[in-house]
Image (tube, rainbow, N blue to C red):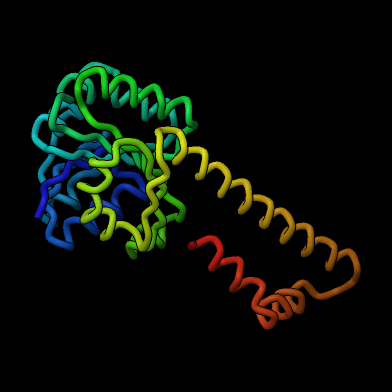
Length: 221
């Protein structure tokens, strides 16, 4: 089983790295607050004191970070990914960032000879814990293929979408659609209440007509 690095142990990253450990992967983890690594160490993970140390140790390193600023910082700052990335090493950023940020990271990584894949996910805490994420990958095709054993643990489906930026664009489109659905749902509840209808009756109607179930399934595609 391959050894992977994992940078970022927030709600998503912790669940994802734990799934890898439970399925036999050797995992080296890093987080800005190193104490967050302790639970994973108890399940067999190793700790890297810096992102650079993790990159140096592992052939493939995955990142799941909070926002574009954090994603860039982990790569470009002192003791960051860029200090140790080189030919033969791959970096997979599964954070939700804008296409421009993904392209900046890709350029920095590839100029050092490394391989890069963006792979944002559709799904939140519960799918992360159960390995039911949908992975929207783009970038280095060979790295994507090498990462499939890990992706098969982390998600129920992974897509390869071509050049860097396409994964981020797809995630933003998915978020827009889901946001529109949630907005319509909220407006429907408000309209029902102002019309003198019982909101609980509306929820029951939606459940019975399977509209809520359909929305949940759409989110999990």
